[in-house]
Image 1 (cartoon, rainbow, N blue to C red):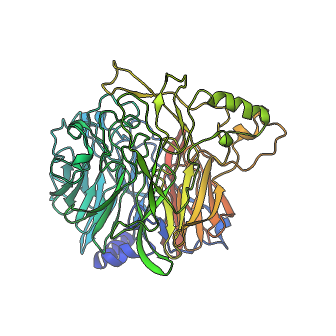
Image 2: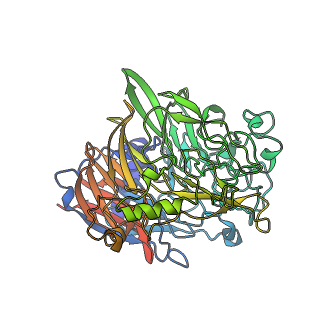
Image 3: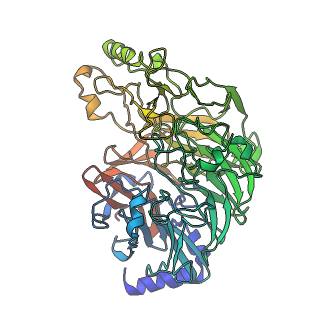
Length: 633
């Protein structure tokens, strides 16, 4: 970018920041808007020319750290032609020319010893942007949990913010932490609502936690100008606070997690922020935390200015399935039976889409508390009921029976039957069981498993039509519990893994899906497999001569919706291909080859009358890159 063009862009934004950030040419937030829509009104790339989409620039993150990062998950933001992204294990912030990919500046922070305890040591999902008049700022949460404020013009620290531009997020949680050793961080960007930066937290995966005691993931709001902590919302309520009685005994004192590791969303006009809260410590055994455990695995609406709870809905009571909320709640205005409803939809790992009035918290369609199977694990506690939405229908497989097992040939079906005879099968909410149970079983086969259903890739919404597009994976897990007192003071931790049939998936395809759901009616419009049949399946000797369907991959597509198209890659471990789909049918209109598999989420912007789509890619042995696609005139 020339110096003159850079100055022109800067002056334009300084003179009218609101208009600049709100222009369809920009992508000013992680999901383009605070509603987490992943929608753009741009239509310069459309059904008539999308087959001409090609790579116009590539930017490598290879040298951003002592070793290359391959699972590169960043989603850039764009303000007036400048791309801002994160890169490398140090989570450097970079600014790029959106038309050429040229690096304009780099900010890098060496966090020293405290980096060793970072639970999410990766490049993160990106940065956040805020502006008021000529005061413009970028915010990023570092791997070792510090909030950094930068000038977008040159990447320099804003010294008036916090301590010389940095706020230590390990301070102010209401518990004393060793700033070098405490294992808490975040890989999601802050959410900026008005003049408040809302910050969540992430910890280590909890299938085999070394202890029942951990850091709590309380959510906080910080002043974007000064860095002062303005409020804290206790996701594990303290004595006297609403929900404290859902933690039996003293479990609230030592239990941790219940953070918000996923991106968040907000209704800026109403000053409301929506938190997708994760589960409490120990993902599949909760014997040390009896009770429903508010606000774990809940959707919580807060006043963004004060942190006061407006409403909440607990999606899983006493979560022991690792079904924490993994995505930003999506905001959309819908029309249900002639009634206009400001809605929020939470897509989940268990493959439900929960739809609420985002102002009142009332479900748009009834959600019924239904009896569920109860645990037989010593010391465990399970809720007698769990919520089941009446609409929309699940967007992926829930529970598992023998009818769901692979059936390409009778021999494969018979082998699958023999393999699952060792496990408990059942409906959604069948609880984990012992690896050496009295009935001879070796655990519970759970569908969706910990990597099934929807996840951080989330969905995308066309706000003009109210149609939600969700990607999901049909992935089973074995939840088998075993005691390991030398490793953990938790009574039981996870062991076991799902069987495969001669290396083939245990279940019928599709293994990954994209589903379109009309939120005005709660009805599914279409569902397609998210990719072609993998070669490992197509060329398997046991399937010679078998006519196979398009199976898709056990991945979750990253989605982008524009005025006329739905775009989707295949995500990590999928094929290096990017597709344009007809939004009304899911039909593939064009396929574009990528240098590697999609690892981040696609976004789009326009410069000088040309539309660009940028997506992060990477793979085993392939360093992460940003790839820009456009249609050359």
